[in-house]
Length: 339
Image 1 (cartoon, rainbow, N blue to C red):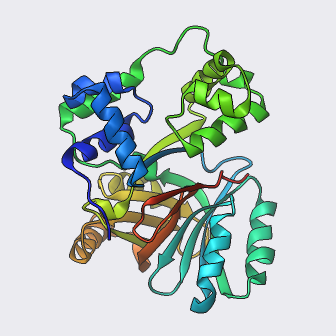
Image 2 (image 1 turned 60 degrees about the vertical axis):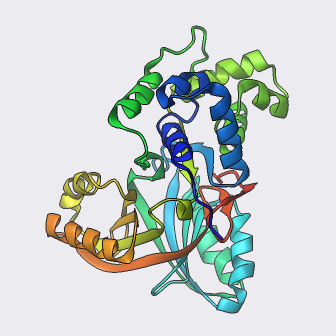
Image 3 (image 1 turned 180 degrees about the vertical axis):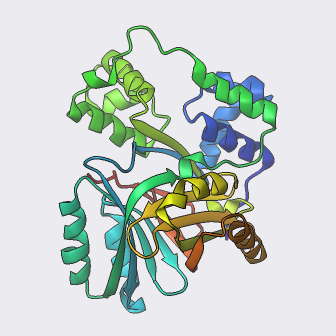
């Protein structure tokens, strides 16, 4: 059965969504508790798989990078084996079992069009359970899950935690361009597994001096070359339903509609795509009636937007590299994002 989070646990997760690497001593006075209590609370949350902090390179699209949404139809008898294989594929960032017209929705990130083509044209069709695929290449990423927030903190607390990010970097921190590709990949790999990993912990894994890793890590984080994200098991929140709208929108209206949907706190993903459905919006909502209310709001605020199709996620099996169990809790199995 799915677990619930206490109000104090939700407050801590909300705080870490704002600043994933804030120290317990920084957060304690804002959350009106002690550093030791926060450390124990976070340990309990992560051990139960109800929240976790990960990282991935940013931006997710741009020169030399490709993000795509792939709809897959497959035989139900072979779906389990297919999902297990895709879970262990570092190119597949997220996997969702979806209702209506497609069995799986994959979020795929590769370092080249050639690598994306290999997956779509050669590897997926070879799997015995795959019947068909439909690929939508992302041309612009407008919003993604790292921006989504719980609503457990008051305005003053949120502002105080956000202000912690304005602390000047330590003197002598390495600039991001001084990082070699090998070191940068190693840092991102370890942050993907644990976004709060200390320089000393990372150094012990990659076998480099802790002082060097500390400088390089500070430079990487300051450069904004990596996105840190505090995720939460969806079933443990009051927004248990994911809905995705596949839309058609004149290109000239994309910017305007992005501003409109960004006003919704439920927004999890918004991107421009290639193909007839050239605009995608995904949100977490409390219930199916709320889904209809949000869709009505969207249609009234953006009359140029034509909703071609919509789907509800039946189950998420992988989110940004982290494998999830049937209740959406992190299992601890992580694949580093492909390139």
